[in-house]
Image (cartoon, rainbow, N blue to C red; front, side, top):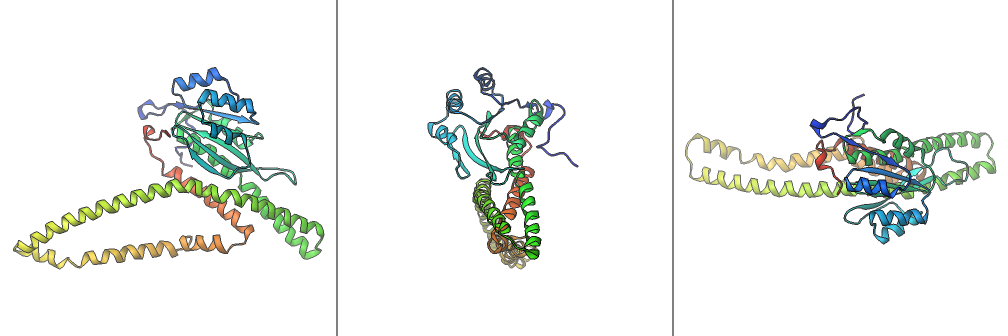
Length: 327
């Protein structure tokens, strides 16, 4: 399997600017944290079951805004991304694996993120984040952004095992109901519905949270390219018009015969857009699946779409480490 930029590296490569080793901490040690900040060395601080004293220490060390500190104390929020200038505060969710019946299906994670640090806060210990800490701590990474990617990707991947278990349980319920329906089957159906609704409430805004920045970037780039193209076409067209009007010889006659070609460009663009929209797994198919699928089917599809979006963001990441500082 080919290596990706998010993979752990075996050794540093100073010639390519790859010399980032990310220390991972699980406790608030002000001396160590201030030393990392003074040397501008990116680090990851992962705190399970933070107390009010822990939040107060974070505010003292990192000078967080009071509103961000207040948000970090209150769990049960919707996924969101608040920009405070030098850092951002994010609420992100993962799914809880191997939970007992009646437990909450989701794990809420509060994230403070900047070009100097990554801080994650959560109530219960999360095996997915612990696995990433063990893999990342002290190892060489391409850049800071891939540490963030691995954390968010690990949380996103936690949705798939519970969804697979729900799918299997639905199959068992179908078989049991066909043979002999009972009240227990009805209770399990309502429990599954509650779990899927809870997942849907966070997965949809979480997907939009990740996609919104890419949509803005794509739109601004599209508008810029369109403006530049219009200006260049106008300049070239004016020069050609002058040459054809006052020029003589075979070349102006050839240019005159090509006047009709630009008329076909909008048609070609429209055909391409129509093909990509109506093709299999295109825009029309995604809209149909999202709005016609049953509630029990939408959550798995949306979770899969979220994972594909993160994978696309990873594959489109730049090579230059100096250009990926988050702040």
